[in-house]
Every structure is written in structure tokens, then in C-alpha cells.
Length: 470
Image 1 (cartoon, rainbow, N blue to C red):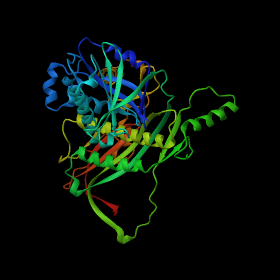
Image 2 (tube, rainbow, N blue to C red; image 1 turned 90 degrees about the vertical axis):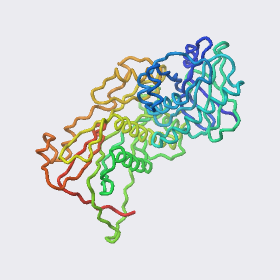
Image 3 (cartoon, one colour; image 1 turned 180 degrees about the vertical axis):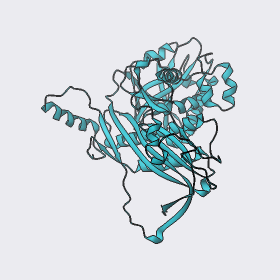
Image 4 (spheres, helix red, strand yellow; image 1 turned 120 degrees about the horizontal axis):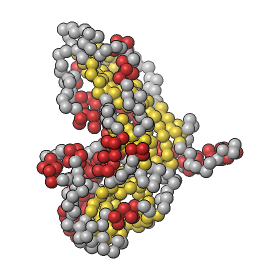
């Protein structure tokens, strides 16, 4: 059985709109993969850098090159496609996708039949392999779909006929396979799944790691949180469900109960998922305990909002996987955006201080003609207008500020951080933390009020923690 792609019907006019005489346009195919079937929710043209940004791009500043992009000179051939631009675009867009959705491949709009041109096919294969390789290196983004195949869709600008092929990214020399691509209204009925994941964890920083950068500390913390999420138990609307149960059947049961009460609206019910981390109930012997001298601690606390969308026939297992991917992907994206925004590190300071770092919070925007939402991240002080810029540049979507769902997570209040510890109440100044001869770091990291707060504090004495040996 061959591969089948179902795309929203409104995406075909978008492709036709991109047609330019004797030139090519390249972009990304976004959607959900389920075995030999893909559901495409959006097509996003890859922007070209302005001439002033080409130099920055060659220097490896992907974020800067993408932040100033303009749609300028069209491509004269498939060979003119710059792999680095498409790869960077795929990485940035992956951060915006909900869990369970991926960059499925690329599309090309241009004259002729690119699949009959050996050099063009080789170029497309190279681009797809580069996307796969780069996303594989971004472990916490969960950037690659379960399928090793990636898609290449071509719309002929002269005949307006489209053809799709798939490339096996696990084998560079593999054949190109035909794909049945269909544009149709309501490609699938989406299940919306919401989750708020609460965190409150402490990570001791041993003496041998006291010189680690903030970025490395956050990466270690992210890995530990990821392991916890992976082991979490999911409950749907307060019920533990069998992993093979179909969400659609679960929704019908809920509808049936509502109908018996005369409250059936005929709408698909949004499912709410709660994650529970299993507790380790083992009792360790005293001989198995170890005292570790630490220079500080990293405390991670708060709540993270998640929203994913699953196809009509999705199972509980698929939903669990998507929710967990979404939480990790969102958290990793925020932390990466945060440490990239820092001008300099604050470790190694000889003075007592308490500094708050606030990574971006999540906002959502619905795709045109769809209930599926994609994410953007706003730093403190930024408003919906900044999200519109990202949506235009990275997704080629124009929306109004009123379309941005900005209340999913509210802006963090630093007072909530100080309230967690009586020693930190009041003004965060050196008067609160007295200076002593032996100065060591304590790092507090949190997701406060559904937004991230990172707090760095230098304590007045060496802290020791009891840590269980594995």
C-alpha cells in the first residue's frame, strides 16, 4: 500500500498564489504522520534573506538571518535552493508546532517536472536529509516523525498540476516513491487535548559542576525533567484509559451521556489530560546513602500549558506521546530562546545577588480555516504584535492581534517567586543576603504561574545535600 497525504483544501489556492513566471518557490510541509498516511495542516514558504543578511547567515547566525528576512529574488532553478535556509526554517517552525506534528517535508512551486530532472531530485534529496539530520541533533524538540520518509510536493507553475514523492532519509541512495496527495475539505476531525503540567523539583549542583555555564545547567535539568515526563502516567478527564482505546470512541461515550441529559451540542469535546509522576517508594539503607557537597541548587517550579491535536482515529497511546512531546518541546524551546537572549553569564560573581530571568511564555494562533493552533513565544514586555511578525516570517500567515490567544499562560509575577521562601521576601538586594567569606551559588529555576522564571542567587554558606545513589 502506497503513502497517502490528505491536505486541507484551502492550501491549494495558497500554492497557486505562490506561482511566479520562470522561477521557483520552496517551503515546508507541516502536519501529522500516521503510518502510511499524513494529514497536512499548513504549507509555509521559506523566506529568503535580504542581501544585507547573507553575510550574517554565512557566519552561522541562523536566528538573526531569519529575524530580518524578506521575500526577495525568486529562485531561478532548484539548484539555487540554499539548504541552510530551509534547515533553519524547519528548526524554527518545529518549535511552533504542537506535539505530535512535524515538518513532513518540503514543497516546490515552479515550471517543468522537477522529478524528471536528476540534478533537481538530488538537490531535493539533499535538502530533506539535511532537515532530518539537523532535527535529529535537537533531541528535545522531537523534530522527526515516526516515519523515515519525507515528502516533496511539486506544483507545476505552468499547468498547475501537482505531484508528490517520498524520500527515505535513512538511505541516501534509495529510490523515490510515488505518493497520492489529496486536497479535500476537513481532512480529518481533530481531537483537542489540553494539559497543564506542574513542576516543583530541586537539582543539587555538586562542587565539580559549579563552574558550568547556565546553558549547560539548564540542559542537564531539562534532561532530568524529560525523564520524569517520559515515566508519567496520563489520565484523560480523570480516568485511566487503555492505551489501545480510540479517542473517538471515548468522545462518543461522553457525548452519549450528555445527550441523555439533553445537553448534546454536536461538537467534539476537548479532552483534558493530567500527568502523574510515579513516586520511588524504595527504602534505602544507610550504607547506600551518600553525602554530596554542593555549591548550590537549581529549583524548577510552576505550571506549563500544553495543547495538542490528534487525528480522528488516534488512540490513547498516540495522545499520551503527543502531550509528552509537546511539553518537552515547548520547555526546550523556551529555555533555548532564553539562553540565546542572555548577553553574558552571571556565574563567578564574588558578591551576593539575586537575579530573575524570565524566559518567554506561550501564546497560540489558529491556522486559517482550521481549529489547529501553533505556538509562538513572547518575552516579558512583548505583546501580540511581536507574535504577528513571527507568524508572517516563519509561517507566511497574516492574522490580527485579536486572533492571538495570549491568556493560555499569564505573565509571571516576581513576587510569587519571593513568596516561596521567607528569606527572599521583600526587596531582592544585598542587604537580604549578607556577605561572608565563603560565597557559593544557589540557582532557582521555575515555571511560575504558567510562565518561566529563572532566578539566580548566591548564598552565604556551603550547602550539603543528601543524594541517593543509583
